[in-house]
Image 1 (cartoon, rainbow, N blue to C red):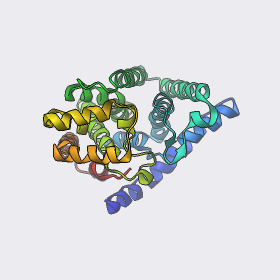
Image 2: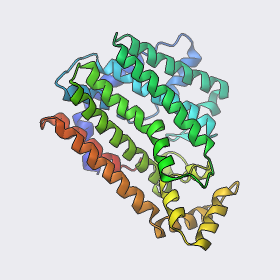
Image 3: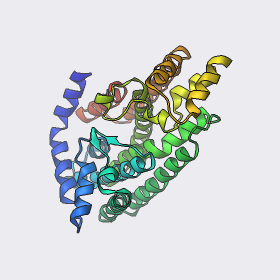
Length: 326
């Protein structure tokens, strides 16, 4: 997987440089505090997956419009805004190995800078003159918020089903990735068939990406992850590995799992015990298989396009989404 990551990064090096320049050039805050807070989250080592996908989606349609990178940063600004808000809602301490913004500048500043980034995204989208793109960005913003609210509302909800979980991750994660791919096609005036194919690719990639992220919360090393392992569980978020294990556990083990989920805090020993049960009752394997199925569907969607270096790159990104460590 290190070789695959290196291959991807080498192939998109110029695109990433263009995206970084556009992120800085188009931020345009009037006040230093806004700039400091926004840069704290924007330039803390993010993967730039979402803007990169928009640029590649545009290129796959046969258009190398140099303005693609500028529009693409909309998706990084949106993502950064959600991270600022999510960290505050979750009372997180660390993001990407750094102290979260609200712990540095306070809750109000973090919220308002997140609002600034959301508004900046809409302004850049409006500059395209394409009302369809602006509507998509606005719709994504609405639905990401609703997904996060629903996840917050369902904390420690033992009745949360797999279908409920899938709906939440579609809204809060997959929709932004799907939108980046769709907008790349629209920006280049692609056919409806190609637009829908790229949207399908983005949807399935986004679903798999979130499932892989949920697995990392149980399986990754905290130092590598950049935040505390088991953070979702500590925050009361039930994700697919746990949902599946709860559904399949014996009565005694399920009762123990429920007690661990519902109590205010739990030890490292509790976490290791719970992880053993997730493995024993297939929660980890089941989630991996579901993620793999989404990646396969994402790659099938790309078959609407002729074989090319860009298509191969999008296929590689899909493969890497499953195997990444962070």
